[in-house]
Each structure stands twice: as structure tokens, then as C-alpha cells.
Length: 122
Image (cartoon, rainbow, N blue to C red; front, side, top):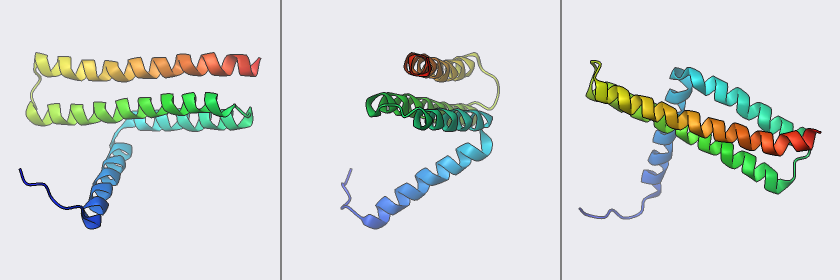
């Protein structure tokens, strides 16, 4: 495999492809709206109560992990649908585990938010 020289044009194209992925994600995935609402709520609450920077960073990290899990889940589901349009037990397992990763990440983010926000609000 030949290594290509650095190119600003290729880097710009890679960002364009990434933004295309985000547009596709937000226009096709119903959970994206739920995550967006939760993100706006949590960030707004953080600003309203003047959350300390270190705690806010934990909140941002948790938010980013949930978004990453949801994006990877969407990619895995699309790949599975392409590879096996018909129902298949192994594809179901892959999709279920991928969705479970989102659930675990969202649950961890929720617990993180509770640990940070409950004492701050009391």
C-alpha cells in the first residue's frame, strides 16, 4: 500500500464526508432527536447552575460517549442491513448487542448526571 502525501483538499473532503454522515444520522434516526434534547437540557442546566469546569467536563465526556455509541450503532445497523437484508439470528444478535452498547452508555451518562446534578441542585 502506497502512502499518499498530505493534502488539504483530501482533508477537506474527509470532513465533508463526516458532515454528510451527521446529516444522514439526524435525518434518519429517531433517537437522534431524543439525544439532542437531552444534550441541550443537560448543557443548559450546567450553565444555569454554574457547574464547575471539572464537573462540566465529565458531563461533556458522558454526552460525547452517548453520541459516539449511537453513531456507531447506526453504522453497524446499516452495515448489517446491507450484508443481510433478510432476518438472520446472527445479524439480530449483532444489532441487539450494538443497541445494548448505546443503552449501557446512556445509563452510565444518566448515573454520572445524577451524581453531579443532584448534590448541586440540593
